[in-house]
Image (cartoon, rainbow, N blue to C red; front, side, top):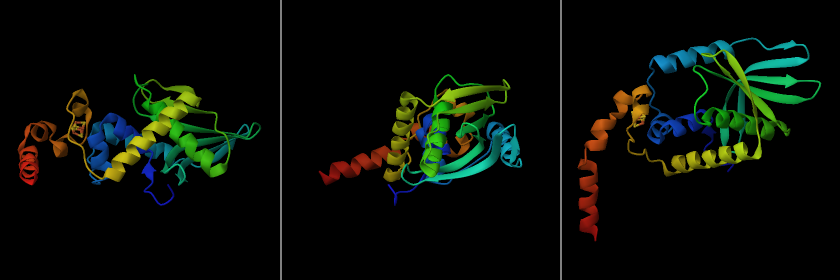
Length: 207
Ligand code: SF4
């Protein structure tokens, strides 16, 4: 794993949203902002730029860069709390919207916890998600099931990166919220069978 390319933690979110989007951003280095991504970026910048401080026995470090070569992950944490009395490290991730119907935010947070565990050789038992839209903090426990789910997703993203090939579009409602829709052109790409035709033609000739 040490010599393999490190996966950015943000790629887990992108992969869960759309594998093609993940490949466009992380393999092809394509990026385009829309309202949603711009708002999310501003929120993260505000949080990340805060000064470190200690209050009531808790140290707050913002914009913490992590790198875990054994795990194959790298990334940046919005906030890391260190509760000194219990020696507990708690990653906190700020989200623009409200809690999702799937577990991807929990998985992303767990990936952060796994990085801290590898870097500091400690056990990180819980973290927290803070949602801008609802102004609520939700505590998340890193149980075995969430850890297994996180490892499985990391492996899937690593496989995609190793393959180095951008998947075809999978059109759906998610495309409407995708900042890359103009670049991806999902309807054109999905319905344009010329690539497939050429590939099939050459396969047939090789047989
Ligand atoms: S437009 Fe749709 S298919 Fe294309 S990258 Fe975005 S979500 Fe994926």
